[in-house]
Every structure is written in structure tokens, then in C-alpha cells.
Amino acid sequence: MAACQICGKHTSVGRSKRHKRGVAGRRWRKRAQVTPRLFKPNIQVKNLVVNGEKKKMKVCAKCIKRIKKYGSVRNYSNIAVG
Image (cartoon, rainbow, N blue to C red; front, side, top):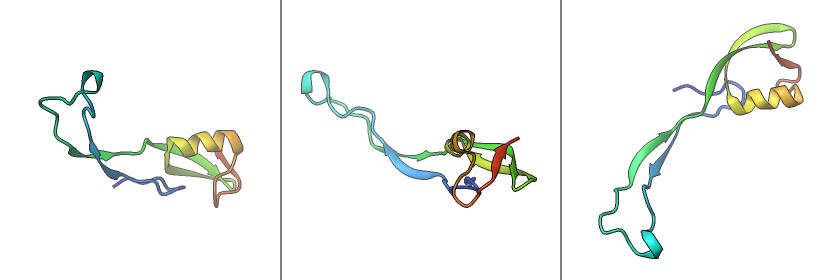
């Protein structure tokens, strides 16, 4: 299971619902079943410069966005996308 090496985000389990109600608030005659599904994070492999060292890390898209905006995330004080 792939996880973000910065925030630890990983695959989570949920359920998919096709439709809740029918047209004009009436119920569907044949509703789709609720089935289990996986919600996967958008993990990218990036070369990051952490405290002057180049590291190849698996990072989620949200952390990449934070790094570009703030230049740091959580424990990593000096980090840059490189």
C-alpha cells in the first residue's frame, strides 16, 4: 500500500452509492447496490531537496501543492521541489 512519506495519507475504504433519490423525490424502483470501494490518494514520485540533500520521495498531490506555496510541510522545514 503506497502512502505519502510526508503526511502519511494512504488508501481508505468506503462505499459507493449510485443514486439516493429518484426523479422529483420519488424512490427508484430498482436501486443500485451499495458496494465497497477504495479511495486512493494521488501519490507522485518526486525529487525533493530536503535540507540540501536530494531525495526521491513518494508524496501526495496536496503536499506538493503545500511545498510549492509555503516551502515547508510539517517536520520538513527546508524543502523544495527539484
